[in-house]
Image (cartoon, rainbow, N blue to C red; front, side):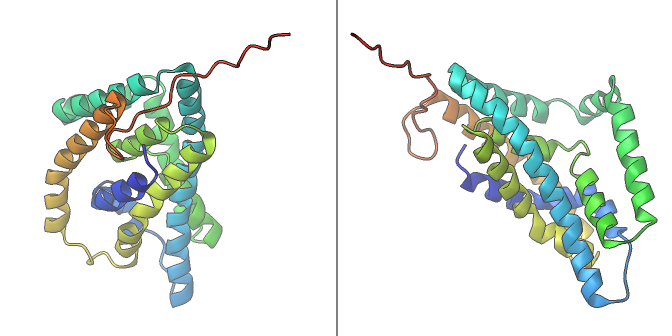
Length: 233
């Protein structure tokens, strides 16, 4: 997936972040000093972007391995199909996945850690809240991870998720600075149309995997591993 799509996805879907993680952004400790108040909000959001970038390193590595194995097209198509299924499956069933196995205890520890950091209110604590916030389960982040999986290297994977996070930054920063910047009606409207946007992204993943030779949308992927030329004495 081309890197420019990462920022676009993050920007267009950032209101979903406000709806899902807005409670944390709205409740961040306040500071009477305007500069510290602003810098604290920036640090919180940079913490999220940092976590996304680290996730991008891991999934970029996986994507690189998949590309070298010659399965990049299949992976892209699979991601697109999974995204479509996630849209069609009722939310009450997908929500049950969070209570399976180690996921529930992990999420509980994350929330507990975030709660303890709220009591500090220091600049490092706000950055750490952002770091932990980036690990909370979020279907929208999984879309970004899917994109990083289709990259060809660790660097591209990290860059993809960093740009994805930066795309969410303007709206999330505005939300953390003033809770009334984005009305509840606007957030609900965006959340209703988000499945449509996700469906379009899913189609993009599938078309990309089909490698139809369409520039930017479905380019030919060079996922077949190249064999070294034989040396004849």
